[in-house]
Image (cartoon, rainbow, N blue to C red; front, side, top):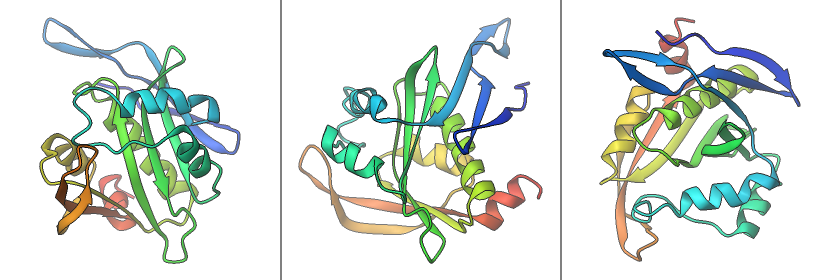
Amino acid sequence: MRPRPRYRTRFGVRRAEIWFAKCRFQGVCCYTPRMTIEVATQADIPAIMAIERTPGFEGFIGRWTHDQHAEQMAKDSVRYFVLREGGKVKAFAIFQQIGDPDRRVHLKRTASSETGQGIGSALLSHALDWLYTETDTNRVDLDLFVENERARRTYEKLGFIVEGQLRDYHRSVDGHIRDALIMSILRKDWAKRHRL
């Protein structure tokens, strides 16, 4: 069983220290190496860009230039979170519209350098905890390409619900205009999952 994360305040945001990496020993999962979840800095942009450009991601994950990331990172309404292992960025998530008058936040992009390991899920789970405990956010929404089944399953495990399909919504990196799903999780959904 995975231990509960311990929180401590650092730089005005909560930093989750989790013992995470999966290893299999006689069918038992254990969580050993230390990973941290933190607010990203400008120094993390090259690592974030490298994850965005992971081979195979071009059909599912958008890409920004260094300047675009720096511009977004400088906004008060945007928060970048990263998950580090041994000081190296393994996953990131970008949330926009924090402080929106409608209390709505948009998950712009998230990706992990190692898919299928639960790293992205851990990062998003802790980021949602931060949003719902440290801000007055009522709704977090996202959109994803219809074909991105792995991401959809991850979001559903975290409590997101599919609200609908947007036809010919977004042009992917490969140039095709594709349909997208819109998903969201409300504060009451998050609270129910946490028995609050």
